[in-house]
Amino acid sequence: MPLRLIRYALSSKHHEPRMFTTHDRMKSSYDVVIIGAGGHGLAAAYYLARDHGITNVAVLERGYIGGGNTGRNTTIIRSNYLTPEGVKFYDASVNLWKDLSAEFDLNLFYSTRGHYTLAHTDSAVRTMRWRAEVNKHYGVDSELVGPDHVKKACPQIDLSCAGHAPILGALYHAPGAIARHDAVAWGYGKGADMRGVEIHQQTEVQGLDIQGGKIVGVNTSRGYISTEKVLSAVAGFTPRVTEMAGFRTPIFVHPLQAMVSEPIKPWLDPILVSGSLHIYISQTARGELVMGASLDPYELHSTRSTLDFTESLSAHMLEMFPFLSHVKVVRQWSGMADMTPDFAPIMGKTPVEGLYLDAGWGTWGFKATPISGKTMAHTVAKDEPHPLITGFSLQRFADFALTGEKGAASVGH
Amino acid sequence: MSEFVYHGEVRNEPDSETCSDSEWTDYVFNRSGIPAVKKEWWCHTPSNIWFIAERDTAKDHVLRTYLYGEGS
Ligand SMILES: Cc1cc2nc3c(=O)[nH]c(=O)nc-3n(C[C@H](O)[C@H](O)[C@H](O)COP(=O)(O)OP(=O)(O)OC[C@H]3O[C@@H](n4cnc5c(N)ncnc54)[C@H](O)[C@@H]3O)c2cc1C
Image 1 (cartoon, chains in turn blue, cyan):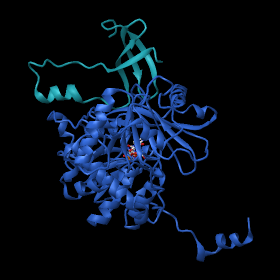
Image 2 (cartoon, chains in turn cyan, blue; image 1 turned 90 degrees about the vertical axis):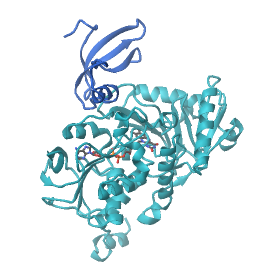
Image 3 (tube, chains in turn blue, yellow; image 1 turned 180 degrees about the vertical axis):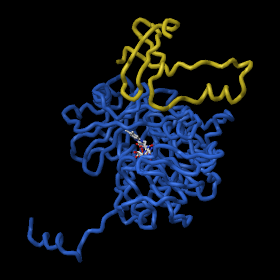
Image 4 (cartoon, chains in turn yellow, blue; image 1 turned 90 degrees about the horizontal axis):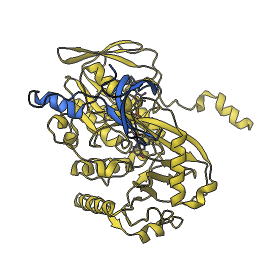
């Protein structure tokens, strides 16, 4: 190491500031306690402090910042959903994403690539046309395109998919993007920390103190905290928290796996998704191919990986891109996806006064990080659901008023 | 594993004539999402045999399997 560098390491004038403040102890009470330091919990903390002036907030995390699904996802960001509620909500999110790097003064590697959802059957083409019309109605850039459009954007593709599943068309969404997932959590965390929010890692919430139907405190692995407002943003752990709160939800947990290849020369600009072949793929700025498939087929509360997954995903990948046969897979992993029956999230108030839920993010919640933080901060601060999330309430199930997003969310991410 | 297909937790359907709306919506939508030993419907597809498995959904260990009506 050049000696000049050591000078900087030793000098107190040039110290590198730490990203987050480490707090030795927790206070005995906070205005708001947020469970979960994933992107969603940290974004909510950030907007509570920045937009609502509520800074006496603790974010409690059983593991480490961004160690949940935030740090495990394949980072696809898009807004070409199927329902009006979904389209408006995710479009607002994409608009927030674009400014985040500048706002945080941290490079999120937000990269607009264009997103193709490939259609291999007539019924898929019909759903794409439907989505394109809903999207355009709400001002979202989205259109049905032919196979030639796909081939032009990605000349390496075998349009016949080894003859098994010829591509008939695609839904093309120009604003589709990817971003660096960890940095999103760090950016929100740092911004919240700077404004006085306390982030406590290695601190697990183990019980909720509810009296007369109201939240009055939480029991943690490091002691009791009193508070009148608790936001649960724990993704795959949500059923455990609602169990502590004493009510049931439709959420069920299945693992979702992903894998990444060794870095190779840049060749893939757009993001490609195929529901029929159960694959999605994009290439990072470092050249790795990030690949995912559909949900594991049964309930499991674990982040184990399987060879089944790697094998079947690789087989489908080769149908589309035979030339990848020599590329090595270097890592695979899994996250616990909190699924809902209609593929829309569950956000807002709960049967317990002062307890708010930000959950049901399944396989699609990374893209929602900014807008969910913003709308949940509003909901917690005003004790009233933000207008953008009224279609996502827990109550919708009891009312048989579901927000059917399956046609746009499954496998699509 | 692909020989066996998961069909969800065994749930008792309330009597739709006598139960309340909230009991009915609870049955239709809500699930016991927490990790636990659960009784689940599985099907062995090559033989089309439906059976019940008691499985630990945190460890993915199958503790017991039996045909409907045969277990406790
Ligand atoms: C493989 C994979 C691929 C995906 N791909 C995409 C994609 O391409 N696009 C997309 O939009 N979405 C995608 N998703 C979904 C997305 O990752 C999630 O919906 C999103 O990251 C959820 O963020 P979160 O902040 O709500 O949860 P998380 O990041 O999971 O954070 C929750 C945190 O809560 C903590 N916690 C839990 N219980 C407690 C407790 N009792 N006390 C304290 N802390 C607790 C956990 O440790 C965790 O850190 C994917 C998911 C997976 C698994």
